[in-house]
Image 1 (cartoon, rainbow, N blue to C red):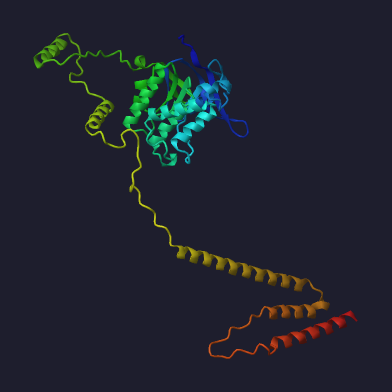
Image 2 (cartoon, one colour; image 1 turned 90 degrees about the horizontal axis):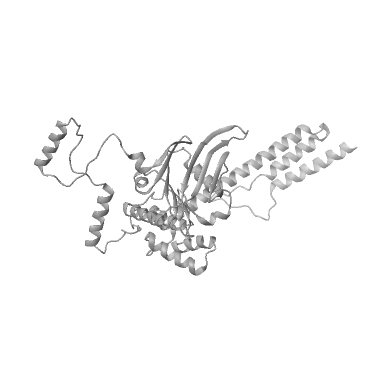
Length: 407
């Protein structure tokens, strides 16, 4: 199969403007690189170097300010080639009410996969990421590592030709990390193209064929992993174990030839490979262990928060309602008094007596019935109250004043 450039970026610049159209941030500055078919390409750089902006432009989520970006030979905004792209974002955004099987089926339907093909791919992907036993569990109950595995599976549901992975091993244990690495290498064997963005440089060193390093939106360097990491100033010789006498002769020879011998000793193994060997040995000895292939929920890890008694809640609500009622009544009383004072000041002198009488009547109407004290006899309800006599006299006086004013 002939190689061609799946991704081509030429003199790409991205500038973010503020509300007034002034340049605020130059996220990318004259960036150029290409990704060949069937290779694993690493996009590296510190935070804020432009990696996420580059990925969003490749996906058509952002528009470039200057430069040219093509994916599968067409502009990045072309919707037709989205069918051939799989994307794993930095955070796995999944619907918490779905289980693993429903989530993958949902994404498969978005790509219009036939029912039988979709079900087969769901089964195969769940087995690949080690989540077959928990396929019916809700995603909200998944650990971060398990959710990451589902995110990787959804990125591969449509059998894409280009896979863009943003921090694929984030949150995974060493076993899961090794399995995901094997999956990425398997994709390369099938001719898939992988764009890998990660801060775990050990993973990039193990997987990538070429890398580019960004800093401040600019390209700092690009090249093959072996060439970039090769130290041309030092020569390394690896041999089988030497006896002590021959090792001393070798040291004497280096000293005789005036060659600086930096170190002599046994090579060390990487911690990751040592860990995997140890787990594999323990797994063979104890085959009924749980949680090695996928995370599990630990009961009792967190304590339940004690709920507030219902009686206290009801009392608090009742107190708040009473306070609101008292506040509302006081506000209404103050409003009535202010209106009365205002009307009294603006009234004509001829109606002064009538206004005063009306105010007295209003005040008398506000008089509440006194609460009878204990031991005292309540008044007979049939007996007319004295307040009514006072009111009748005031009404007669006011009517007489009004007649005189009219005359």
